[in-house]
Structure formats: structure tokens, C-alpha cells
Amino acid sequence: MSRQMSDGPAVSSTASKATQCLDQTSGSLGKPGNAETAASASEKQNDPMVHYCVVRSDLTFGQQAAQLIHAVGESHNGTVHPPGTVAVALSARNQEHLLELESCLKKAGLPHVLISECDGEPMAIGLHPTRDRAAIRKVLSSIPLVK
Image (cartoon, rainbow, N blue to C red; front, side, top):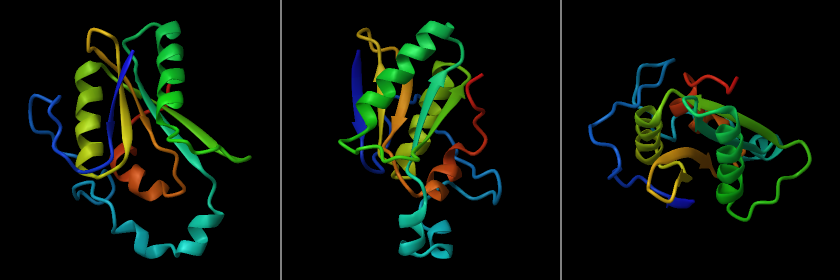
């Protein structure tokens, strides 16, 4: 198991083609900042901590469970999950879709960890826990929950 951390807007070297990260609600590219103007810093402190992870749906149930555990463990970034933390498990269609999402997360500057098998096959993504759901929703709002 290996991981590849991303803390900033670096261009993805793993995605083979350019992907557009379209915000489903406004039609704009998924970039952080615009949605933050509506909420003050004090309001965000009252929001629950949220930990998002994305796993490939073309894996078996057991593989999905194991990869989600890896994604949570590798992406918590030393953050202690306080009581009331919300866990969100999302489902990418396949490896290509997962890499497209990872590229969008990088472009949006959202810190995350790409979880890969030893042979380099991407399996899941764990985002660093946050209280700022708005920035993440810009990129992941169209991605379904794990079933």
C-alpha cells in the first residue's frame, strides 16, 4: 500500500487527459474561495468536522472496506476526530474516474491522499478532515455515496 499526498494545486501527473472539474450547481470550475464568503469563521467553528473518502465501486465489497480504512488512516493528517465528526464515503466508478477526481481535488487545492496498491494501482482517496464542506462539495457534489 502506498500513498501520494497532495496539499496544493499542483497539476496531476497521474491523470492522462485534462479533466474539467465542473461545479454541478453553478457551472463554474471547482475552485475554493467563492462559497466561503457566506459563512463567517465563527460559524465554521460550530460546523461539525467532516472526513470525506472516495473508493472505486468496481472493487469487491471487501476491497472497498479495506481501501476506505486505508484512506481514513492515511488522510487524517494528525487530526483528532472530535465527537460528532461526520464520515462520508463516496463511490468513484472506476480507476479512471478516481484519477479524474484526484485531478480536480488538486486543481481546487484540497489536501488529500491518493491510496494506491504496491503496483501503483489507485484504489481510494482520503481528504483531510475539515469543517469547510462548501469547498469539497464544489468538486464532489455529484459523486454518489458508497452502496
